[in-house]
Image (cartoon, rainbow, N blue to C red):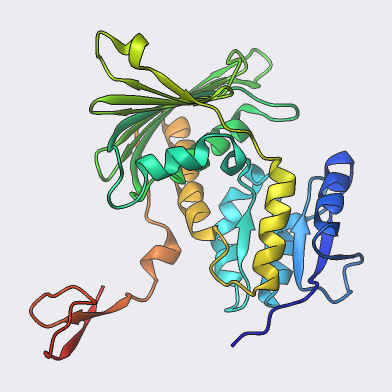
Length: 320
């Protein structure tokens, strides 16, 4: 049995007010260490971190888990290489603030998994930049949010961008088709006053916004009388993620990272850039790590019986 760490040593890299908030949040659950050469059980890259890519790569190569809590958008192309750098003991976690939005976890329970409560037909999302964000940063945030709800891969992307006279991005319009037939329509721009994610199913429309999760019948004439708004409190993403990451490091949880999902986001974003360059649809290439991954071996009972059903027949090993 793997021994649990009593008080993990966390090396924090960053500067400014946001990095200080990370330091306070981590210090509640672990021991903070400073300096690039001090021994540490994990690394946190907070806003203001200098050369985060090289720091993350070095840590992962040495088997040290990494939490990437600064802006990932400029480094998305490097995510596949970072994952290939991971040793068996290291995991890469990338901060997803939307995980701590009130109503998001309920939305995922309703719409995700192999047997969702409601099967989504398409998603529609609109979002505007927060302080210090550019249009592309917001688009990456939106794509990662939708990807966390899906078990299917993106197939094709069509992207259009509106720029100001100075050349800065003013708005970005994305249309993403997935292998399952699902469609995402995403609008990102400075004119969008609030973030809103809408999931449309056969007979329901679910809207996640700042006021909580709203569920209403889709197309029913008496929708106003049957509408339901479920309000739950947001959790501070810094406090929540610091607690989760430290617990994963202390428990030596090798499955706590979300790098595989961000590998898909990185590949999707590459297709967005291709579409913008060529002025038309772009195919989403399958991630390298997925192409080269060894097939999963599963034990399947002879006769096609499900696992857990008593049987005297032998077991056959098949490739997943």
